[in-house]
Image 1 (cartoon, rainbow, N blue to C red):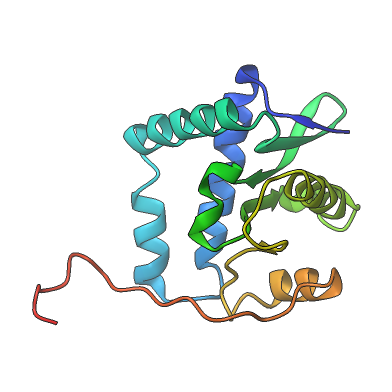
Image 2 (spheres, helix red, strand yellow):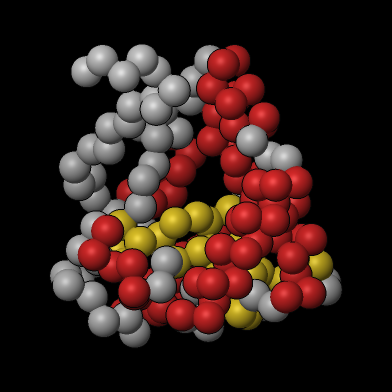
Length: 166
């Protein structure tokens, strides 16, 4: 069952969020990348993330939806509220994560369908839903390709702790 996130889901969401963050570095970077992602997952980050979740839910009740199986939260999808649609001129699928033991059972598809329904109901500059997927994340790229997503642009990043010279 897919349903909107509730406050009592916070611990389960945080556990899944940690899996999401740690999974970003699996097979897509070196040990330094994995360490950066792991190091940020402290109590301060947990509180700021869950506060942000609550702010997004205030703007859009279905911004965060969870998948439940046998009374346990096993996955989630996070679509940014349409108040943030100008970031990429469309709906932003910020996160989709399914617990590894549940993958391949259709939960990811159900969460993606929920995300698309949420996005279709939003007031968007352009009718599209976008997400960022690491080009080395073959599993995610295959999943999204299979569901009609196409390559669109490329995201670049600069480490802000680097020297200020440009």
